[in-house]
Length: 357
Image (cartoon, rainbow, N blue to C red; front, side):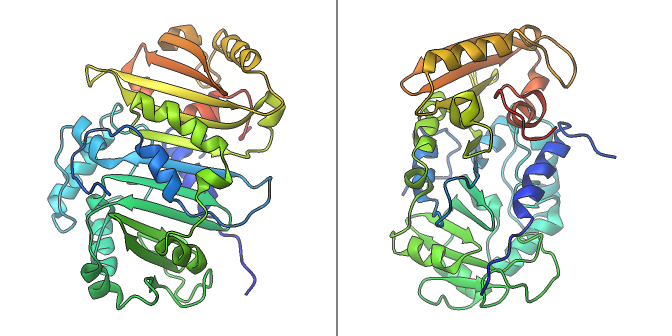
């Protein structure tokens, strides 16, 4: 059948931007929250990628949900603990250091205890049980990989037996909506496919992607778009627990970059937020020239509130690492860590290009 684009990409990204005040409008299965070096790179290697054109935008959102909870000083509740879910959501929402991307409420439409229960009742699992996740969006497909201890028995009890390793919900035809009712796990009511291996759970709109993934025969997003692997390395080295990683965004190459990663972690004191912007230099670009451009951007001011960047950031260091340029910042006010990746991308354009005017 003819594949049909869905609005999920724009719904997810724009909802995050609006919620952050940027766009105005009227096989380790441990439950530890410790940031594990290299996990972003590993998850990018596990994200299945469809065939797409050279100009297709790729956006990957990565987060360590266990670390979010740890930094907010709140225990992760069971999905059926309504009071616990509400307290957990309130705690992580109130902690800008822990939750710069607004997940899981906006990432997984998990806004309240009722949503958590819907995930649990329908799928036999909820994102509350994940440690890390990586969500890739490329219209019309999207896929998310969760690191979690869920087993096949629970998925089978909720979704029925797997066929060729794939559990299905929402109809047999990919992208064909059988029940138009939105759900917590599919806000635009698209059919979804679930599969499990090696301590990971895949949620995808595509049966071919899920089938290839089950057999470890998928094309990883980091292979199809090699610049993303270079972007992931500095983010992993800095121990970020939330990041946006993007490639093939129109207009990037004109500025000498072809991919970008924006992340937030904490310093050694486990309290001071640290922001990173990693620019991958295009094949026809010069790292030193891109670094000089970033320095010039830092001499400007915020388009959101007019403050000088030198006032927003307590420190700002620009370094060249192989084919990347890395901007590392700390914040004069810890509140500015909230929404930092989205602010950089949508509002203040420290990337040097504009996605939303």
